Image 1 (cartoon, rainbow, N blue to C red):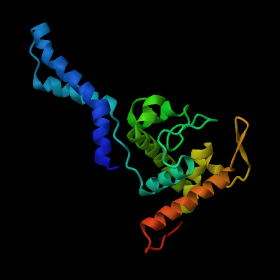
Image 2 (image 1 turned 120 degrees about the horizontal axis):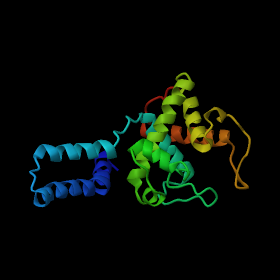
Image 3 (image 1 turned 120 degrees about the vertical axis):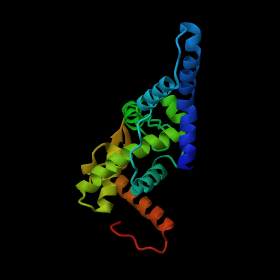
Image 4 (image 1 turned 60 degrees about the vertical axis):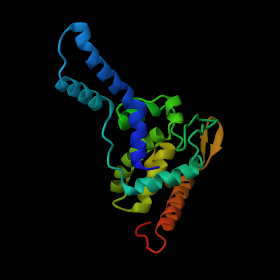
Length: 209
């Protein structure tokens, strides 16, 4: 799915109705108040709406795209409608429902409902990439540039909220149900990352992974 398509879908779904409302209000105002409405006023209203509703997306590191692909392969098999029966984790990257309001607000500038999140692959990609990028930027620093360790730290962060536990072999439990250790999960994500990277660049030696 291209970024242009994502942008158009996002614009149509969330921005166009509000822009239409602004224009209708601007056109109708003279009929109600007998006061002229100038083009500059419409532009100012539109600019204010855009600045409030759409937060510019942070530049996403290329490694994040591969980490995301590795995580969705591990978590849901790229099923955008997936819901974990134990934790209620949502979507193709299994975002915990309690994280969704804050994460979506950080990534988009407004909170997204569970229903809208599950219904929109574009929203899921935008929110997941934004959060993974935050984790990656901190993890590559913490690992002193070691890509393999940084990937495992991101995976551990996504899985448990504890990046420093990426080597922990302790079995995890959620609501009485057994899950893999943080180390097992992190190493699985690293292996998936390596496979994806090698498939994309079969003739190029990989450094640091």
